[in-house]
Image (cartoon, rainbow, N blue to C red):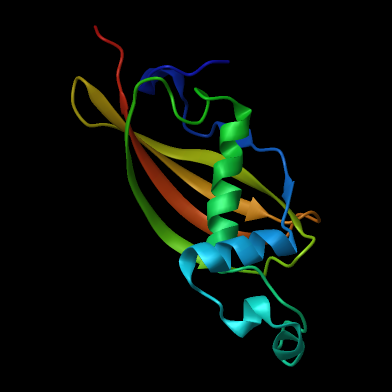
Length: 151
């Protein structure tokens, strides 16, 4: 269903994205783009001596890729046509490493809806990026500012 306005959503409504596998190329490109070449992500021998025993994706790489997967649901489902602004992100926790070869997806649940004024409302959602076996890797809360239906 196409979502256009604040009123088209309901508290408790959930959305589940399709999955995407994280590759070594993703890590290399993210390292090049950000300048973060920490050996935990890019040096196989170094990473083997860590508690993870292998290279892991940057936490922010998992967050960026995982959260963007929601857009594969359609352009107006996660962000309605009346989208005004990304309003914030809170409580980001990296609860499990994302490794090369892990397939991640994002599950989003609307936890609150607040009428800001006659023209706008804020939708708050709890998001969980999960790995292929259902383990939560990243948990965070987002808020978006969206337009309301005109009376």
